[in-house]
Amino acid sequence: MSSRIARSLTLAALTAALAACSSVPLDQAGTTSGTGADGASTGQIMDPFNPQSPLAQQRSVYFEFDSYTVPEQYRSLVEMHAGYLRNNSQQRVRIEGHADARGGSEYNLALGQRRSEAVSRMMGLLGVNAGQIEAISFGKERPRAMGNTEADYAENRRADIVYQQ
Amino acid sequence: MCSATAVRSYAASWRSWAGAVLAATIAMAAPQAHAQLRVDISGVGATQYPIAVADFNGDAQGRNVSEIIRADLSRSGQFRLINATGANLGVESQVSFGEWSGRGADYLAYGTVTQTGGQYSISYRLVDNVRQTQLDAIAFAGSERELRRLSHRIADRIYEKITGVRGVFSTRIAYVLQTGDTHELQIADADGQNPQVMLRSKHSIISPAWSPDGTRLAYVSFELGKPVVYVQTLATGQRTPVANFKGNNSAPAWSPNGDQLAVVLSRDGISQIYTMGLDGSGLRRVMRSPLIDTEPQYTPDGGSLIFTSDRGGSPQIYRVPVTGGDAQRITFNGSYNISPALSPDGNQLVYVTRRNGAFRLALQDMAGGSEQLLTAGPDDESPSFAPNGMQVLYSSVQDGRSVLAVTSVDGRVRQTLSALNGKVREPVWGPFTD
Image 1 (spheres, chains in turn orange, red):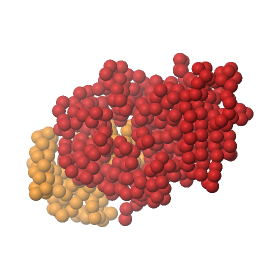
Image 2 (cartoon, each protein chain N blue to C red; image 1 turned 90 degrees about the vertical axis):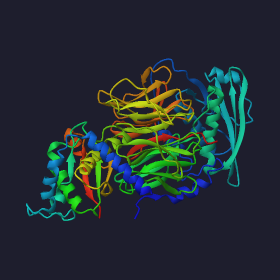
Image 3 (cartoon, one colour; image 1 turned 120 degrees about the vertical axis):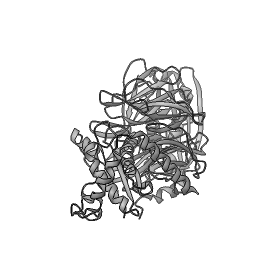
């Protein structure tokens, strides 16, 4: 019963996401990610646990300063992962959002969550089952770049797609 | 499997604390304590009560007791210490009021420490040399380990007798110390001394929050690979995940009666505020906000929540009834105001504000709304009020070092507590427990 509630909540969230994000080209998404997903057209290894696979190598989405929408240049990356997840409905994935080191811990946690949620929503719109995705945030707790330059901050404004074993 | 460990020695020692007992691993570290302190007093018009605290006679520990009392009073910024070297006074000594007021000491504290079979007795008196009256006289007993806590209690009494406000020297603070990739949730005396490790982890710990009775801490640990809210009982060390929903679980705040938590969850997408019972029952979403809501804090009457939201385009502080409804914006200056904390009487709000790239503390009257910048930055975070509302504890960076710092609510007196090796984060001042 609780899972039914969860599902209906998820559906509601998806509907809300669809309404909010009208700029995502849904018709295109299906075809693009379809080819990327099985790797048939490219001959690439489509295995997130194989280090040679683009699924393992390309799993970071970087965001502009003070922005929480997936930049256009990362659309194909998200589509690639969405395609794989659609074809492997048992596979679960965590989207881990990050923020730069400036400011409060909790607010940065929430900002990182906006980034992971943006990727999660896009995957949902691309047909990935919400039950496969968990969007979380590390805020400023796990910076990849430790410095205080603008380049360091930019490196930490991202969401990583992490496949769960 | 789980790399966070509740520290047992701490838990075991805490039991003996129940009866206002000091369970310290470091006994009487007063001289070092004094060496680490830095008190900066700025501005004009600060009232300072001139007081002499004579070395307590009778036992070698007497001097340490007096030293702790002097350090406490001095750190408050509200007292000016008059030299009492060589006074040679005991609790039964006849005091010449005229002599001490002649030295400039309006007040004098003196006493005696005795020891029998490892049990100590401290008796003390406080006199007003100007009015020529006794203000206080009391005796405490305890083991050597308890001497530090008893000294703080005497300082609390002196503070209250003279200023009329309850002292906070025997209260405690919690904070996180990060050294390399080790994170420790620590509890220390209000002067930053006598630190005890509650939890050691390879993963971040943030947002510790004291239960209103001071027996438990709620906090966020990342040990499961994502933020999960735990509650840990100090006396036993026992810890339980209380909010571990899909997505993030963070920013716990206790209701004033201690039976509800406000938490921030992302289970329904973006970070939103919920309330729940400590056993996880009665989970309720307070609002439906289009953007981030986080860092809830209950008002002292338990009827409202203060929180941070970027619903208006930039992070600002709002207030909403705990039952939901329309949120009212509270902060209007600047484009980045976060981490609100309310004074114990609910009349004042302290928060972090970003001004010209510097993170500073600001204080605002809840009724009036005028804002005062309390600190200069550049990296002041996590403010919380002392339980008597007179001071604010926060984390700061001074000369490139990460420190715990305290400022008076008028911003005039700022002090650096223990400068620890590592990065000190997320400090929060505990409640009165006596």
